[in-house]
Length: 336
Image (cartoon, rainbow, N blue to C red):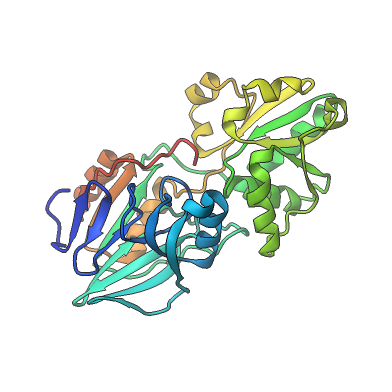
C-alpha cells in the first residue's frame, strides 16, 4: 500500500489490518478478529475466531459455512457506537446485498470509511447506501471505468418478461449469482407484474428461502430439480452462471440462455459466454455513482481496491484528490 494519511492501517497477507483496534477488515485468511462488510465469499471467509457484522451477514455466513463459520460473533446495528480497544466503530448500510454494511472507523478523531462493495441504485432487497463524511474513503472500483453506466434495472428485467412472452416454446435459463442477484431479479420481475412460478437451481434455494423468511417477498418459487423438462417450457429457471453450460442445463428444451450482470454491457463477454439474452443489472456502483459517492462522503483521500484501480486513481489525482490503489488480492468481480 502506498503511503497514505493513515499510519495505523496496514496491509498484511491476511488483508487490511487496523493496528490500534487489533482487527482485520474482510480478511482473506483466518484471523483472530474480523470485521465483515457482507456475506459474499470473497469478503466473508470461514474459520475466523471472532466476527463482527450485521445480523443478516452473520446468518448468511452460518448458512453457507456451517460449523466452520467462526468460533464467536457479535451483531452490530446501524449507527450503533462500538469501542474496540481505542478505536470507535459505527456501521452504515452499503446498499450492495442483504446485510451489507460500511464501517466508519474513528481513531483519535481521524475517520476512515470502509465501504466494502456498494451501489447507489434502489434495491428493495437491502437497505440503501448511506454516504457518511470521512477523512479517508476506501472504495471499490469493480466498474471504475467511464464506459460503465448501468441502465435502469426495471427496464433490463422487462427484457426477460418480453422474451418469455414472445418465445412461448422456449425455456429461459438465466444465470444469476446465488446471493443478492437472484433475489433482486425475482423482486424486479414481481414488481413488473410477473406472477408465474419462478424455478430455481438447487444451489439457489437455501439463500432464497432465507430472504423470504426476512420479509423479502419473492412470490412463488420452486426447485427445478426433478421437474419434467416439458413442464418447464415457457418458464423462467434461475441458476448459477457456472450451470449455464454444464450437464444439468442440457436436459431443458429449446433453451434461451440469459446472464444477469453488469459485465453484460461488454459485447465480447456476451459472445464468449454464448449468451442470447444479456441483462445488465449490477450490484456495484458504476463510474458516475463512484464519483458521486466520493463527492458525497467529502473525503480528502481515497484509497481504491478490487477493480479498475488505475483509471479511477488517475482521475481522482487529476481532480485534486489524494488517491492510491490498495492492490488487495483475493477479491473477485466475475460473479458480481
